[in-house]
Image (cartoon, rainbow, N blue to C red; front, side, top):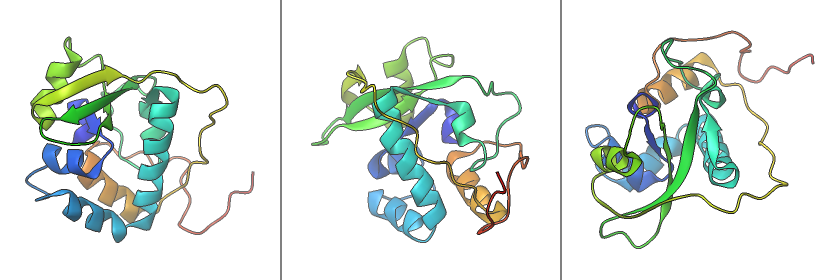
Length: 166
């Protein structure tokens, strides 16, 4: 749902604001992740690397989410910092620039009014991607419920707990 909308908040309160029909508040989002350690690990990895790199490739969601066949795997979701009206802290949000001519308006359409919105700056040169983890099909389905990409791609996936021979 979130990737398909082109706006992916990387904080619990933002996810709750974007998906009010699934989550009443940030605590419910945190609880949801607490019982899905694989999803939480991957979420933390994306949350850490997105602001550091300034973007996330749509393909970074492959293996943990079902990809929508109409989405370009080489597309990038650009990282921005935002602060919702009334919030004390800023958070990160990923935005698909191909979906919105006015990126701030796109974020506000999904998350509500924001007081602060700016592109991530100062990208460190020594940041590297965290190792990607393979999730079992159940975890993929659970993450699909949250992020909402549609067409499953199971190439290269292995069962939970197995090791790659490479």
